[in-house]
Image: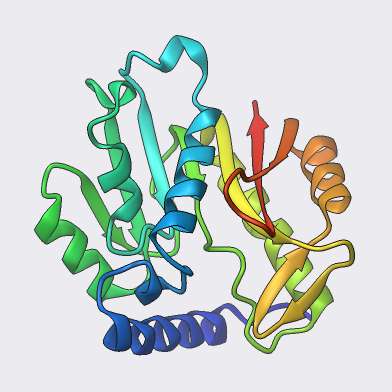
Length: 209
């Protein structure tokens, strides 16, 4: 069986809106533990930016951008000089908040990428598996990564929860590092995986074209 995309979208929107009502536009409001773990993941992701691009002039997509926390984190970084940014999320409340706070960036309420960019970052978006089976979510995860990589010119960087053996626990999917590496390196491009510094059960994956 495959993950039913319409059901997944409905479940995701409902879950995030309920969480946002409880905790507001904050890390907990998008199911992060706290500010520290969110920033640790962001800091790890931007290590994917290649040395020649650290001075800027690049294009960036953020898939599952939430209320714009990643953009807020990077907007004053040197690599954002003369760079463009577009954030995507399926929760309209998040996109509205991002547009209000960061009008200089581009924001789309969509689960589909609109165009190709140099870099594509995904933080936390691929972890929430709800009540789908392990195999269903594994296939969905891999199909999403493949689809995203089509829209990348240089580097796809994303984070995942991991465990020794893949599992779904409290609705969250934990990947096996070797399995993620094999899929990405064989089917997409040169792959590097590191354990995300400052976190216990998180990896950062970099796939380069």
